[in-house]
Length: 342
Ligand code: F6P
Image (cartoon, rainbow, N blue to C red; front, top):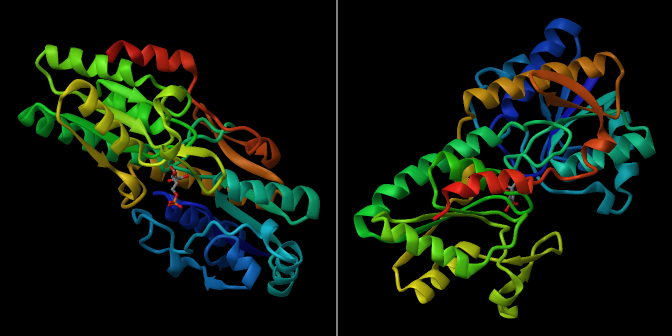
């Protein structure tokens, strides 16, 4: 049997660990052949392939990024996209496709397997940890570790200058990275996309922190938004998904804090540093287990499914359910963390 593998969407640490586990078990245990597709869905669309065998996956476990490349190409938006994929898979004699991706990439896999009988198995990945069907996605733990280290470093420079330091982390729709790194790094304010924030309240927390003779650290997710009255129309933009965003929320907030409290403020935008480099041990462990179970789904002919972590077990869930809803931060959890604000 020949199995295709692709990685789509934003890259994240652990992708190579999944690919390695799939190929190692697939070749050694089941005698499968593999075809790697380049750059997510663009590979099967354009018939762009890469050799994928045991030598190709040697030494890649600790490497960040993906040896297959990635893109946000969506075949459902391409002319004849579905037909081109079906024809290319048939020509290459690929009988199963393992799709490693986030909400968008897996959403395509769900439709291809549900409506067009393309045999797909999904593996969830995203640093955002916002897929509802799995307790954790790999990439998240690494991103939280990087953000936490950055916050630790910001504390010492903030205190030397008695400044406010705003740290903007990734998370357009879900505040998991902000919440976890903010808590682990001892931030004084954490702002997430799920709850609009009140700039006056943020300033009050900042001021009370200074009163206790400490310099405040504000962690803000890139998708966090101030309450309506605080944001003027010119500050708004539409992101690539058509959602209203305050682009550069970290910079915007630092300026507001300076203006309203009179304290000097600076912003650090962590950006793609959170997605790069070597995966944490947890992410290597989770990614490897996902890969081992994904190839078992192929062996069982269990298509239209996605592997997921539930507690310590890896389970199979329907791909369609997996992408139906985003996992966002529960207000009760956010409230719990709020005891450290100010
Ligand atoms: O979904 C992962 C993610 O890293 C988000 O947190 C972030 O908003 C987005 O991707 C950035 O995408 P790009 O790399 O395409 O700018």
